Image (cartoon, rainbow, N blue to C red; front, side, top):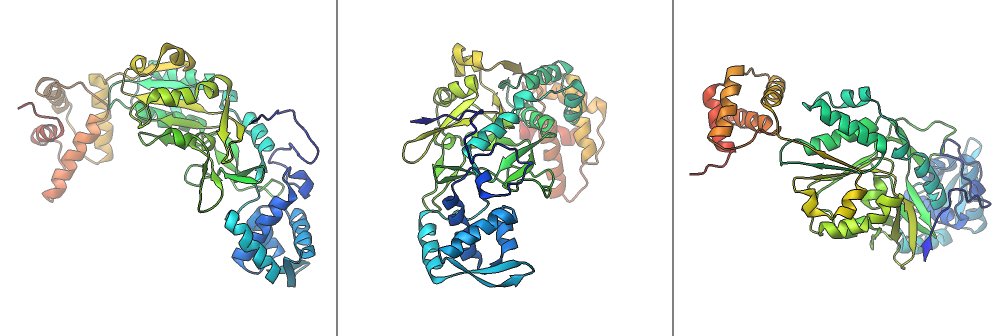
Length: 428
C-alpha cells in the first residue's frame, strides 16, 4: 500500500502552518498525543528529575503543549511534582513511570525532539524546492571565484541551476569535476530552509536532521516551531560506497527507529553522486531506482512492515563521472538528466594560473619560464594531458621533499622535474 500525501489535505488536528508558527497546543501538531507522551516519558526517565522548562527544551515544544503532556503523565501516575521553579513544576518519574519507560525504550530508544507529521514535512519540502530558486550570473561568478574555470562552463552551470533539474558532469579524471559539483552546492547554500529533527509515520520515527550535513543558519526565534531547524540548503556527497540499500529507510535494530536515507537528508539541497559508475551496485540498478523520482519529484520509501510512504524528491542531483555517460546509461535515462556538462582538460593558461595561485597559497614563488618547461615535460616525457589537479599534487611533492630535507620549499627546475618523476608513471 502506498501512502500518498496531498499538499491540499487539511484534515482536523493536522496544522499545515509553517515552522514560523510555534504550536500552542498538542492538537496543532498533527501527531498522535500518545507518541509525544512516550517521548516525554523517555526523556524524563533518561535525564532524571527536571523542570517543566527543561523538558520543554528537550522535546522542542512550547510550555503549553508540554504542560498538556505532563498533565496526562501525572494522570497516568507516570510522573510526579517534586517542587516548583517559579510558576512551573519540577518533575520526576514514578515507579510505574520507570516500568513504562523501560518498556518503551525496549521498542524504541528515540528520546529527542518531537517529530513533525509526514504531511507537514511534505508540504514544507515542496515550498522549499530547489526548482523555485533563481540564480543570477553574479551569484555563480562569485561562488566559483576560487576556481580557474572557463566562462562557457560557468554559463552552462548557471543555466542548469535555474532548471532545478539533474546535471551530468563528465570528463577525464583530475579535471575538477568534484570541485565544481561541490561549488554548485555553495551557490544554493546561501538560501535558508527548514529541516525537521524527525518525522513521524504511523508511530514510527524517522530521524532527518544530521548535524554533519545540516548546518544551522540562525537560531530559532521565540515564535518559531523548534521541531524544525533553519539551515543552509544541504549538500550530500556519496561515492563508491553507495548501494541500493542506502537509498531506503534503515531500521536500526539496536535503537528501534529509522534514519532517513541520503536523498531524504539532501532534500531541498544538492545530492552529489561522485565517481558515478564505480559503485558496488551497477549503475543501471541505481538509475532504475530513480526513474520516478527524477521524472515526478516523488520517492517511495519502505517501512519494516512493507508499507510504502511517499516523500518529496526535491533536490538537485549532480552525477559526476570520468566514464562515458553513453556507456553507463541508456538514452532514455540520459534524456531525464536535463543538462550534460563536459569538463575538459586544462589549457596552458589555466594550468599556469592554477599553479601560481596554489604556489602563492604555499608562500613560494614560481617562474613563468619554468612552468612552460614543466608543461613541455608533462606532455613530452610523460605523455600526459594537463589537468587541474596536477599543480596541487606537484607542489605537494615539492613541499614534502623539502620537509624531509628540513629546507624551505623551492620551485626551481630540479625540484619540479623530480616532482614530476615521482608523480607520473614511468614507462621504463
